[in-house]
Length: 287
Length: 335
Image (tube, rainbow over all chains, first blue to last red; front, side, top):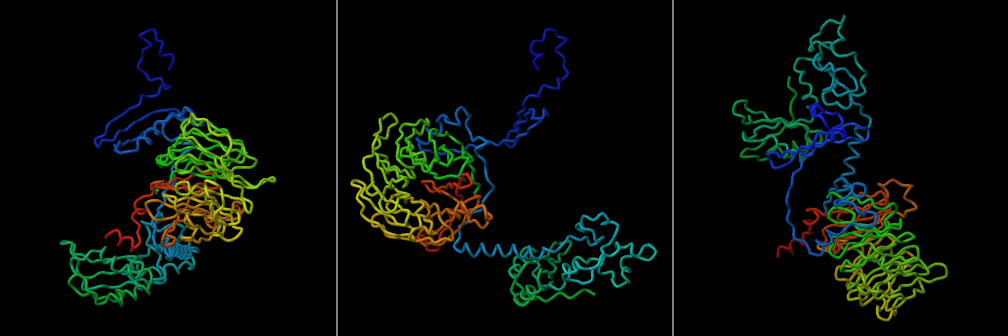
């Protein structure tokens, strides 16, 4: 940089970039009133660092006590002597956000929260992630054979969590004799029929309710809100007409827990919703 | 609510005070330096150098001109708030555990430790609230605590009484003119030290925090117990929030037990109780050690807590805090 300062010859006034020179700071004003400032500097390792900051300036007018305003302008002293205005990073930092909501039954709430957390944790304690396609220890969605293989069939409908103990099978479709291709519906001795393809939806049949006589103006979220009172709802399916987008009049609600489903079934059957009276029953397995 | 962490101290905090207008926070710790910070953004304005021992206490007068500190080097000092200059040093035979200005700033009390054959005392100085003025060398009056040493003390409304909390769990009321003891009431369990005493804005009542795991709201005139806030941990500090009818209690197990337990069990939280109904309404976590001191903004907009972990955490209350009301309060507000 310094050699450029006392240049003598026009020939030295070359265009090429001296790699040690930092590009100047760029300030651009964006359409939404914010400013983008791009600065360059060298870090401790001597590497060039580009910093892009987007700054929004908001003017907040505040009336303050004149004594307070005067004190704001006081010079710093002691260890802070000579430091620039504004909080310094080595003494002042911002902590993580704390949600503080005073409430009367604070204790009860805190306890419940703790219990909730514990029970979920306990449920998941001995669970390992297991791929349904190749039994590897990754999520099914991440399976490398996702597109090429169908999921291994699992024994039960509802027992997703319970199936962890099953012995690992030789990977899906390759288990057939001689390694030749076996269509999905013939795998595992042909026990599985074609309609089990959508296994994902069927596994929780035991805790799924069929709701009929639903108003055609119903929304999935409304149904979810109504049924969530009884327990954790894992899935809400509201059949809709493809063309009009209106509800067809029936819906399926899956619960995480069968007892919740039973309770919901009992309570919501005959419930007035919209201008109609709901009919709720346990979904029958499609044949 | 996003707290601002102030890391200006190298050792555990001992006291925090807000200036009368609420814009400055003064903090003292055992590391011999007092700090002053801006409440709004946590910027450090300066530090006060001169003490040779752990600082135990700090107070600022109502005009934010003078700052008083007391330390384990057996001195109390008076500082110019603006420049950080030491204006006056008073020597005592023992450590100074507490200083407090009267509400008009013309008197200062200093509580000294009982040690080395000296009894605990409360010394009262006349102060001229002026940086230039010559301050008196000797106390106007000295109250000697013969039975049990005073740990904390403060001025009641109009500087009428001096109220002191003692090591044996009692609270006494002295006439601030003569130094005569008018009342002595055992409000906390006996031999459970009173760790803090902070005033309501009008100084007609105060809150005391004690090692016996309770904080009590006490009237200054007759030392009658108005309210009791029981907790499950020894309390180091308590304050009364203006604007909302809450009290904030800070505590945690004794510093010597801290390393043996996790921070979850250590109960290092600021506890909020409703001042009138005595219910616990919430807690604020964050410190890694017991809270040694809590102080509330004089307009009730926020609070600061200082812990054994050496941090000051400054909290600005947000909407749910101000919105919270009991049903009766809401009804009353509607009317």
